[in-house]
Image (tube, rainbow, N blue to C red; front, side, top):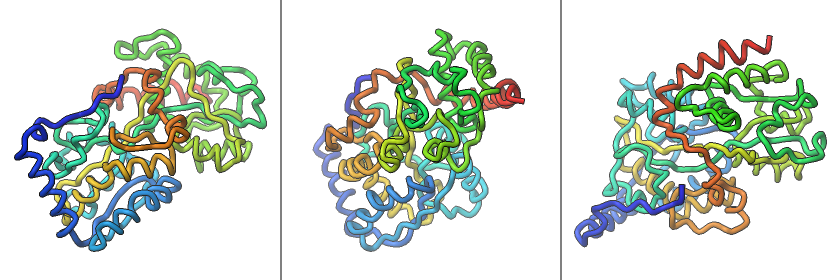
Length: 354
């Protein structure tokens, strides 16, 4: 998974170059109005507002961005479905699996380099589905632990099954993609080909179930680790790195030696947006080198734009330098298994905790 630049064919000609320049100029000079962005709530909302939205509004003073925070991608998808006949949202940021469902259900609109010039500079992993919303952040699944309770940093995913942590685990189950990611990582640990079967990983996770304090961490697994409610949990690297700093090191972060999965959040134009021009201007800015670098520095999501210049210190704490440790996972394929795997979690894994 060595990063390579994604080049649009049209950019190879002088005419296309002129069109891109004209499109960018039109966005900066003529765009105005209000758009609604649906994205994650909590610390993501706080950091994204400071790093991306406020600078965008300074650059586009005629545009107001209203941020509608949500707890999960599935909630955002449900909202889009309910608005299909009267669209209230212009742009949505949610995970790639949910985006693929949104594409299939015709809720999202296609994007082109002519509309979004920064698409030309994205890494190849950022191209989710031709013509639709690209990745806006890269992240990866990690183990998080209480450094006050666990003196020696765990190195392997197998630490979850260590008897000394029984009753002190927080595991986020499906329908969150933390659950599907953990299943893929467990298959890798066992030497199982998850594309053929998840029988072994499901059985192994069922063995773990009695030791799990919660499969639905509330308020979240990071807080539960910091306040000492659990000793070991699953989470996302970007948030974990942020909370590691916030907790002055009480929360530790582990990339398991067996590898992890690349988590992709996408940015999408809603079909039927009532302010499409401003929405496209915002998407283009969100994918720009400056916005990508700013959000990486603020919250350790790896940039998707190959031209983003990020400090070595921040880069070292993102997935950027560890793409070779990411397990191969086709999220489009995984989306076709989502319901089947969700039932496995409900009926075989979570139920084993009783």
